[in-house]
Image 1: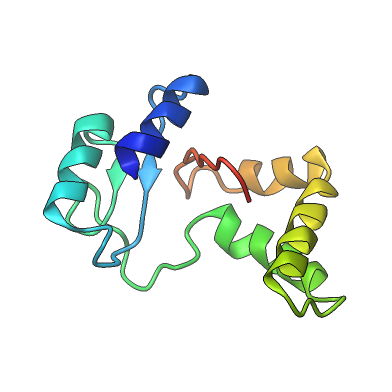
Image 2 (image 1 turned 180 degrees about the vertical axis):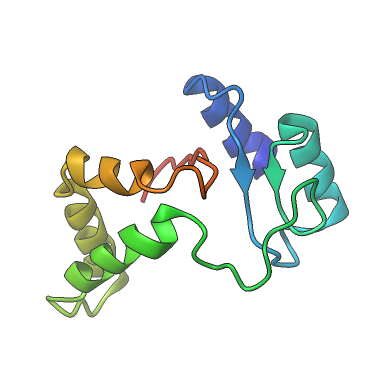
Length: 124
């Protein structure tokens, strides 16, 4: 998955020099996974067993966790989707309605306390 999806996206978006962050899930900390990530990100890797350790009990270290998903989730479930297709459509619709200014603000607040990280997604 990393070599098939993540690397091509990083290269296509010219994201050289980005930081990569992940939590301590077992699949994220497997030796082979960490070796691939260390090769690509070197010291710019935040992960359990990585050069910079994932802080204990820090599930909300990024703006996506502490800001964006809470905002999106409340709007996605307004119509109470009953199928996966409805849920996916709601998520895409809500993300499509978020103004750029709304996304810029949390990324600029407190940057001295957080490390800016790149996120790569092919689809929602």
